[in-house]
Length: 238
Image (cartoon, helix red, strand yellow):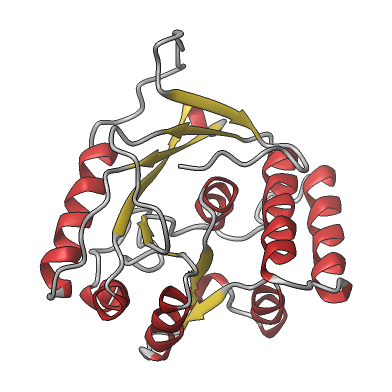
């Protein structure tokens, strides 16, 4: 889904229109309220699309405190699924908000827009140092359906702020009816963004190359969690 309006079924069109009005007129308030509205909006649109989100937890818990979440969330469907799972301020590629209206709504909703100029690095670093987690796609917008190579400059803020980098692999499953969000083990920031970006890219690529395992058959011992997107559903913390 290249944009929230890519599939204009009546349910989707109604949800997107309601979301636009909410974003344009709501009093967003503090960070907690902004986060709650973002999650509800993302869940509304996913539900209208008939898409469920399945969370696959990391074998090792993520460190507490602020972190830079890096994911191959190159399209709106991926961005929305990630927003319902990971509590973080999203950074979206400018290609996804290619009109003034979309850009304005994104910023009112607390999203950062990366136009490739490098200016967003300072904003992300400031948020991380203030204790706010940030989620970004280091590969930028997808080309021919494939995510780009992870850019060192996109993870440099984690080195600047000395916070962990938490890779996340996002992929479709069950014919597109499910979006899997794989939370992968965290990486320490170190002092050089280049090997950090490479390690995060390899971790995500390992999951993506595994392919769609088909419909899940959860067992009591399974760490897989399936969440049906619906307005206001409870967020699962990693």
